Length: 79
Image (cartoon, rainbow, N blue to C red; front, side, top):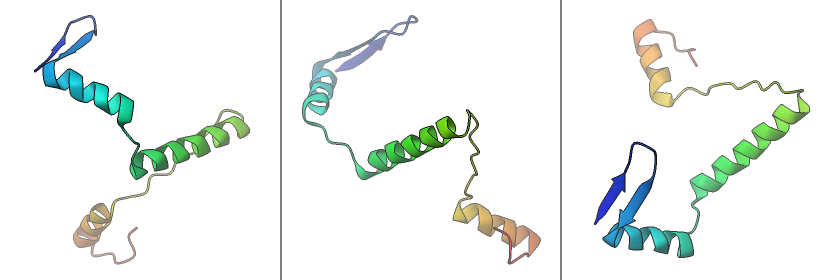
């Protein structure tokens, strides 16, 4: 088993890695996270096209980050 690559970007899979990759390509299924990502990308693409090439993206903070801000500032209303 080996994955060989060059400075020019080619990648060669050998042995079990090549077999596993081949099986994944032939029989693999997408998971729910991948499907959700594609849906969001399609929605963003539609918004970009309908908005004249301008897309506004708002970050949604992770819960742990919000809790960290609250613990430092003591602000219970921090989002």
